[in-house]
Image 1 (cartoon, helix red, strand yellow):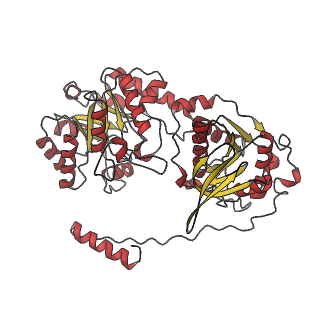
Image 2: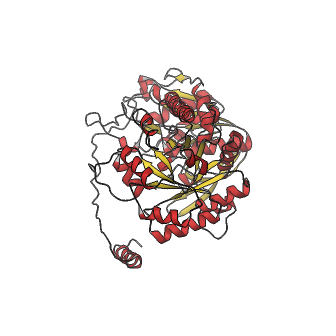
Image 3: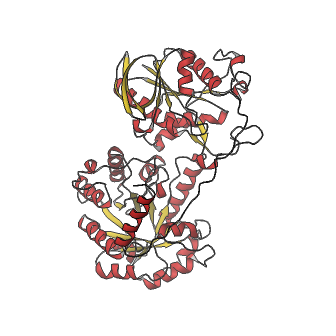
Length: 262
Length: 265
């Protein structure tokens, strides 16, 4: 079995800023981390590998320094990493990004399963996973909270939705996007991190994956961000409750009830 | 631990590199330099466990991977409840291999990325969550008599609550106590010493000038700009608690390290 895990390098939440001119996220000089949802996708891939045997390939698209997230993936059990990096990819929206990633999946070849986090915490679109499935013409399962059965030809996916969950059986090849309920990602050991630092990460360009230049970058993106605004500031209200512990607890419950919070 | 106090062996906190570091090699080098310096001084190196919920490398794996040599009885590993069972057993085995017997067992600070031991992991019954008490019992059962287990004492918690917790910790196998940072005389520490005269107590001296972090540690607001001289506080702790050891948290290795040896006379 061959599993590709798509991983995105995102700005650390506390540092995220948007360029007012380009409307794009400022990435230069900002601390970058692995998109938290992608860690759950990676953990599931490694667990499948440990259970059934599989090759796990971490794939990311981004600037050269995005190789860091691939090394982190290798440190926790991915077998190799591939960096998709080319100026031609710059400005790609979710559709163009899905296209580029799907071309990389095709170039890898023989892939049974693509796992993605449900969304990236910078764009919050949740479109790239489904976009990859659409580009490849593969089945997809989104918001997956459990994969109770995986075998050579198919798997079951428990999909979370607002009213509960449903259980689907899906044939490979397929794309799955995952939520945090899926597992508890392991933490890399120092030994794993040091070994991953020595691994060579190949960089693939648009030409390497045979991407049509009219389908990537700004020109290949059907959407444009025309305006961005920060969310309105939240009104914080502080209430200090004094008295004995029992009185304070009772007052707190009363306040929460009045606000319909309990 | 008693001989640490009798021989004026400081407990020097060292933070391992964070998992998210972008300069791992340099951070590893800095850790090794600090560790070796503490060993050369004959002090005890105390290595934190994901302090403040920040993901970091484990103390025992740092020592193993960097081929550091722990001095005899001169290393203490912090161990909290935010691990998987497999990870916990791995740390205990690794400490046993390295001959590290001193463990500071704490509940610890969690985060989204950290797993937490479940009661069934440590064979605890009748509790909803694993605290340092259940962890102490587990370590004693898994490695009977091997580890010298210490626990934390927080003088800023409600007195009765903290006293009851300490009784449970002692019953679970604690053999020494390290306090939260103490500034000058604290009546709760006085009471602790009176209640457990046979138990070695180590008071924590806050060596940083970062008062916002100290506020977090002690649980009450210390206004910025409050005059605070870590070295003077260290001297006063020695004077007030002559029978206690001292744990140096956030010690400045460049600016303070050479000054502290003259403080314990």
